[in-house]
Amino acid sequence: MTVSTELIKQLRAMTGAGMMDVKKTLDETGGDVDKAAALLRERGIAKAGKKADRAATEGLVGSYVHHNGRIAVLVEVNCETDFVARNEGFQELAKNLAIHIAMANPQYLRREDVPEDVVEAERAALRAQAREEGKPEAIIEKMVEGRLGKFFTEACLLEQPYIKDDKKTIDQLVKESIAKIGENIQVGRFSRIAIGE
Image (cartoon, rainbow, N blue to C red; front, side, top):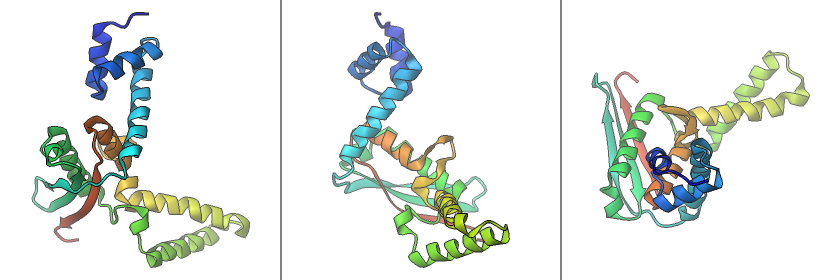
């Protein structure tokens, strides 16, 4: 099957991938745009993993102030070069991360950042809750670990579902940006200020 120019344009618009990658993937999937988009996404995330250990010492501080002026966010987003820091896609990522932080209110960047005493206090509370529900001791630990995963998803920025597309996490959003832009991108510090909190 010959892949039409229209299909190539459509898939490029959807994914931001290069012309040759798009054509090759469309050939592989028999012209199925959705399958090709999924395949390109998988390959992009795989490429992103290879870039993860490269130094990201440039970047910018993304900001967002909510329309009512009661919530503000600053987020440090790092990349490898100042050229990418000036890239529109990179700047949009920083802005979207700031908006997400304003709405989702994460407490930590990643689960490794959650202090051990906070994790243990959460475990103890979850154990007590499971016992209150009358769950057998044999399954309480498995329940606690499952519910602890939910705690991390709510508390850690990189594990949160993205507010504009809850089918992907913030970590996946960053990896997609790495695949599109072609450089390592890291989320650094962030700060959220809200009146009355």
